[in-house]
Length: 249
Length: 356
Ligand code: HEM
Ligand code: HEM
Ligand code: FES
Image 1 (cartoon, each protein chain N blue to C red):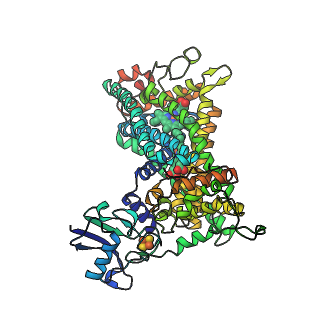
Image 2 (image 1 turned 90 degrees about the vertical axis):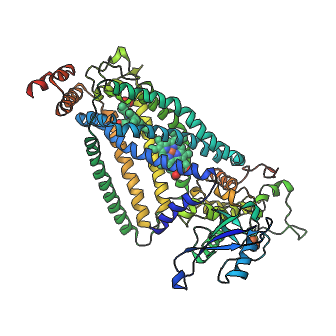
Image 3 (image 1 turned 135 degrees about the vertical axis):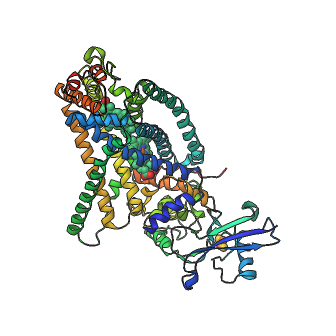
């Protein structure tokens, strides 16, 4: 089948292209099972070498190729053409500075990520056997869902609060905080809760749920944010989540 | 500015699910009601502080422009209320999020379900009014009566900017505007708790003013004010809006002036909820510390002015002299709009008939 692509282009180094504009491409002999990323490759390789986008793994793991496809944030490498139809509109994700075509500056996004201390904090002596800090399956299940995040920014850049104000940490950073906050081996809960409770933290979330539908890994993003809000209200993550309640059915 | 335009445009362009539209409607309806509440509380306070203006205000409420606005207002309050409950519910039960989309549809359906009979009844009041020989203030005058508010908004804006500038000078350059983490938490909670408390109060208030009776009955002569006690105050003898309010505020259950207490609770809860909501919205779109500070002062000034005017009116109350004054003002309004001698006599405005 034939597919028409409409792509948002921008190149600050070329005066003629320094204002964002739309460019159209036609592709023939497309299979319904082709992924949008492959078709972007075909455009770049067969028609227009200047088309610029990020990708690395092509397998939904590295999180490089989040883009707005037909109006919503998706991973180009996970999206089959049969699920988008015969005309495809591609734009960069929103709320981060566009560098060129579909490539955005991810630095503000990662700055928020670093802010929530996305690592395990535990200064206690290592266990006597000198090996790992053990955790029960029940305790692990509590934050299992948020370990799936690949930091593609699809959720954060789907959020109207983030578009309005880039100072908001955004859903991805909060999911990352959730992953450590609810880990019973972590000892930085007070610090983390304090950071998250600031004006640019969780309270900017207006439960729009755009993040949840944008996540290519089906993480229950808005739920995670809600659980962090509950933890801040209670002053502790303890007892906020029932073990195994995140298990997908 | 560019980010504001971009944000607003993309908030419409992004193809989010229903939650995005609920958010947008919730925000717009909230802002609309905030605008109304400013006019409304200031207007209501005239019943005490400057009765002739209250008569004029109620006449503007009875004009077609406001009647249209009234339908939009009632719809906004109803939608915002139900959706507010939905938001608060999923805040407390985040694990049930899978039902939020259905809940959002439910909110729309429930709003429609409630609004249908309410609109029918409201429309009935409108028809009743226009079937009789209705007195309607001309559109230019309705609009002119709102112009002082523009002046008031401008003044409040200038005052907010001045205070923000002063604050920035004292606090030093580059100082940030932010609430402490515990205040943010408090306000988040306040929005939810006050919302739940406002719901029955505002539904009751709108039910009395729009359904049980119409806005037009506020100034209907020989009409018992809704919620007032026949035995304690009797019907509205002068047909002034001021007497209407007086009758309600002078109705007691035991030692309690119930409608005063009711209005007081509504006033405090709604004004603080509305202006903290406005602060949240403004802070979404303003980034410069000075602008954020000005927005904060604006909300603070507006809330304080409304609480002082509305609270003051409720505490001071309405006396006979105010009703007399209103009564004369009403005659004057009718006279300047060409009421015949006969009509004036019927309205109890004999003396005005003689002088003209
Ligand atoms: C009738 C019962 C009401 C309920 C249950 C309710 C509930 C809520 C809730 C839960 C929020 C927070 C939304 C969020 O953080 O996502 C909110 C926001 C807001 N409310 Fe209400 N509310 C009610 C009445 C009102 C009234 C009467 C006004 C106007 C005076 C108002 C104005 C606002 C505004 C301006 C916001 C901010 C909207 C935003 O941030 O997008 N609300 N309301
Ligand atoms: C067009 C629609 C409305 C009409 C005709 C109306 C009518 C009135 C009247 C006649 C009063 C005088 C006091 C009384 O009789 O109890 C009053 C007071 C009040 N109304 Fe409304 N109302 C309307 C909508 C609303 C809404 C939507 C709200 C809240 C969001 C509201 C909040 C209040 C408050 C707080 C007071 C007390 C004001 C004060 O303390 O001076 N009203 N209203
Ligand atoms: S290219 Fe790695 S996630 Fe799509």
